[in-house]
Length: 323
Image 1: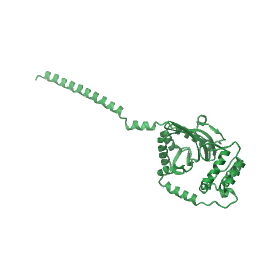
Image 2: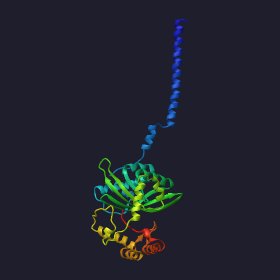
Image 3: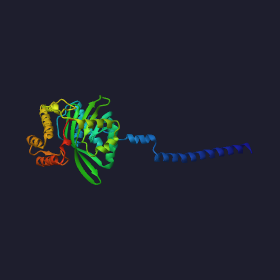
Image 4: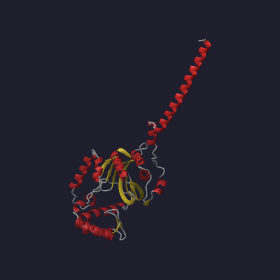
């Protein structure tokens, strides 16, 4: 083969290889791109997980309180109390944005040492989140208006509406919660130390399965309550001790506290004492939802309380202590 023919053959071979390389590169490149679009990378999946719209600011209280109004409003002092107020409003907003958002918010609002007592079960943050995940898979629950938001020092009591939507039905209920907060400083912010929501009821047995070490504490507290003997004291503050006491700013607070303690004592003395207490301390137009979520007039309430005392062993309803 002549040299010039050999050079031409080399050129043809090189061109063929280049063309084939371009073709295969284009085909496999497109296939790789297509597969990449169909199967997100770990980084893309992580980005989706992180793309949760969690509200976390102390500067939007005015906007949030318009969305979740406090019907019976009280004065909130600057400092820790204002931060707690914002945390409560922000918590409602994040809950209503869905479970994933609320769970992410929980990692901001709580610490690993935080405890939440739900329906009498003592839950850590992980247990609390797991329990709420189960509940929200069974029904959609939305937060509504606040009826009351009382904040004193690092304690708050809230009374609010919630809406449950399940299988086409819609039900409005009311809940009371008590929460102890602590300001952990600029880096961590104001977080929950311990909270208490609702009383121990049929939900208790379903919730305690989320507990581990906390079961021992729960059993110890239950035994303490069952064995507890009310002191034979004339002073009602000594007779019904307050475990988490606070200092009261309002001058009327002591009067209100004395009425509450008198209610405890009247209940424990018997139905006639308690009826007298109601007639002495309740306005004639007052209502009560003490027995369940339905509001009752005082006459209706007194009649149902009488029936309760007649039908049940009232000893198991003895009021012993503020937690």
